[in-house]
Length: 140
Image 1 (spheres, helix red, strand yellow):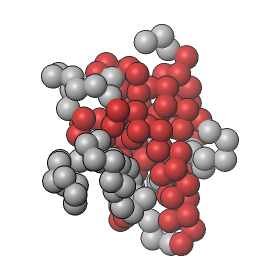
Image 2: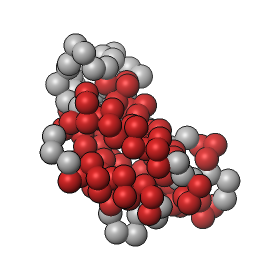
Image 3: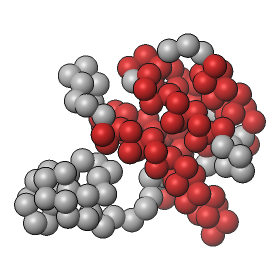
């Protein structure tokens, strides 16, 4: 996406253009639309999106790292969200693998991700919460 005013390439989840300050208008959706089939599921998904806002913000303001692409970090966060939206059918092994990826390549993102997964009333399956607790208590 490009800024309408200064034509600068915008970061994926930018709310404002870092060059001219113009507000970027985008729908508030991080999860894959295909995972929600009912209004109730969509409401849960939007709640989870809001819980993951700090994660996407941290990725956005993260300094460039030649060994880690930001797109990889965004994709991993989206995958975690999509898996969590499956509720009791979520696969904790996948989430644990993605948390391990953050642990290895971007340990600074573990705290916002695990915090989002462990929030009260987030609707996260117990198996996923267990995986998140493991990574929250593990030293980085």
